[in-house]
Image (cartoon, rainbow, N blue to C red; front, side, top):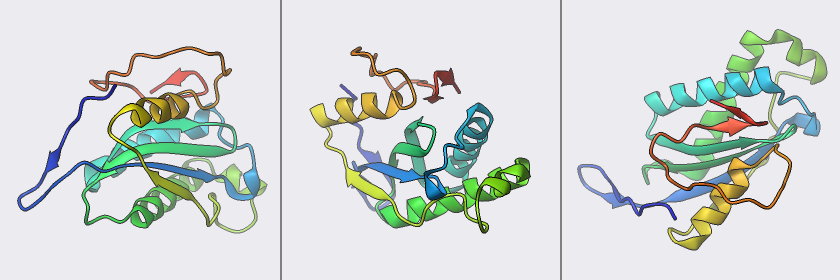
Length: 158
């Protein structure tokens, strides 16, 4: 189980975790190892610039799951907008051949799914689910410690 952490700012405290899911445009299976590496590096840069902390990112070939927390002033839709726009820009800049598989200048679909995650048992279930995206789905349990936990997609640890 995840340690209960209350984030604090000068005038508020919060404990809000979001599970966000969105697919690649047209559900194209474009999330190969090179693309995922760019997404992971870009996510770390987003964390440095915004009040968003990506606690776990899991990728399958055609969609991404994100487990994150953010200051309450940042709406879940804004988290999605920031993540999608910045990662898409970086992907097209570093891998311009991706545009060949997509029409227009969009990498992600317009839609998304978002839910809040409870701080008790639900967190571990969602965390395992997100962490195991793109892996063979064998019944196994993972260490749920967050200290220095790397992100992983398709079995590659970042």
